Length: 74
Image (tube, rainbow, N blue to C red; front, side):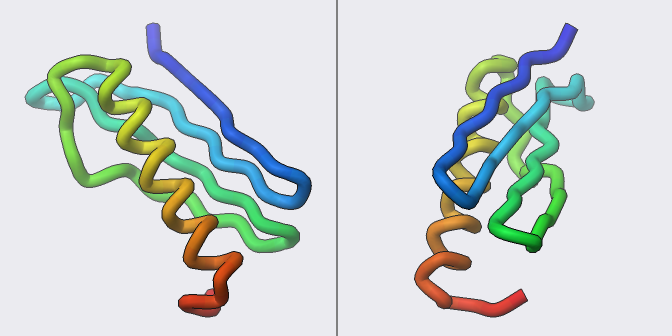
């Protein structure tokens, strides 16, 4: 069983799903902002599954924050 979660606003969405890894769990993250979307696996492995999910969602929120503030253009 994997954990999943979503955080969203009016024109953006961050979702994550956990997967077992060699030393715990990792989170696969998808970020969407308008027509832009990007998927990645969070680099950190966590011992607890919920920590992996929170870390992945946090990283996705950073992506959205940078994207909306035009820190980078993708």
